[in-house]
Length: 128
Image (tube, rainbow, N blue to C red; front, side, top):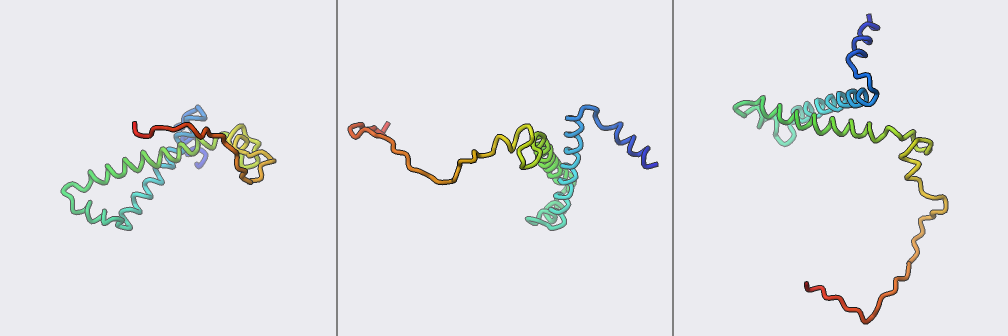
């Protein structure tokens, strides 16, 4: 019976791996947004629960806050999944990411002053 449930779930996901990645991470972002929304109302952050419950129509503010959280946190999770596609850890064996950011071996972290010649007779007018 569990294989039939897995087959149904697998059929509903897109066939393209990129769209499947976006769909799965979008749903994960929406779940995180739901947890954050529940935490905001459970913790009564900024006295928001009391304010919403005393409104004439308490459903509208909850829907607006949920929509904003779904868009924001869903986009964050999907964006981080896209950014991590080429990164295979910190060893630099991936196609991008860590290999590009690696500093040369001879970099020691020492700063050295660089002389910059300046003309003494040149005067700039700063009042334009």
